[in-house]
Amino acid sequence: MLEELASRDKVIGVKQSRRAIAEGKAAKAFFACDADPAVLEGLRLGCAEQGVPTEEDHSMSELGRACRISVGAAVAVLLK
Image (cartoon, rainbow, N blue to C red; front, side, top):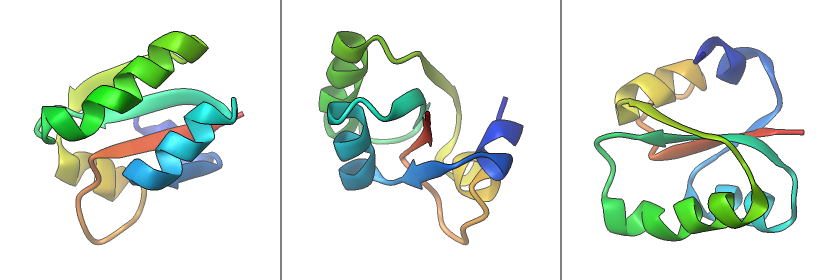
């Protein structure tokens, strides 16, 4: 499923992801399994409220590589 992050429009990071979810622009959210749970809790709640599917099976470094950035990512969101 990470192939989607390489080929589709997305946002990366907590602030941009929070905005996309709140504005109803998120199609799917990817949360890193090794990210700080306190940082991601609000995003998880936003996804639940908006009905955005989530995936939490990958590490920060795996998400970063899938997004083609040189650092890890706590969250990435595919856009509609």
